[in-house]
Image 1 (cartoon, rainbow, N blue to C red):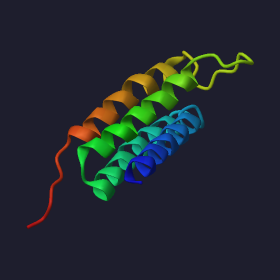
Image 2: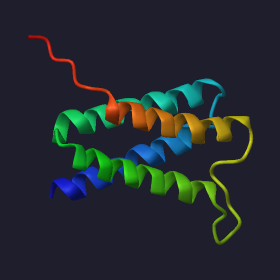
Image 3: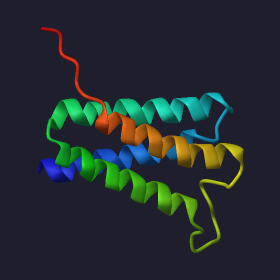
Image 4: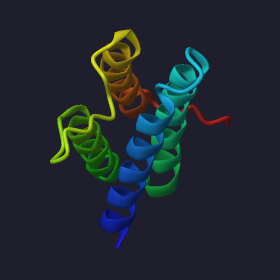
Length: 107
């Protein structure tokens, strides 16, 4: 059940970031990166194990890759403009940083 929840959360984070990245530039772009980082940190705090973070990250990347390709009606959600390219690069980097960054607990 945790696997399904982490996959659904990864898809939700990817969809939200995709929809926000091109709205009210540059604020939507910054908000999409913040949502990506905080969403993966929430998954880290909720599920603890790295495998659930990797499931969520793989789903996030699948959503982003699908949004960057042409659909059946030639629709495209991530354009290859400045913010689209930055979103792909910075989103992936943010995703990796949020997974690799260790938890700091106050003892």
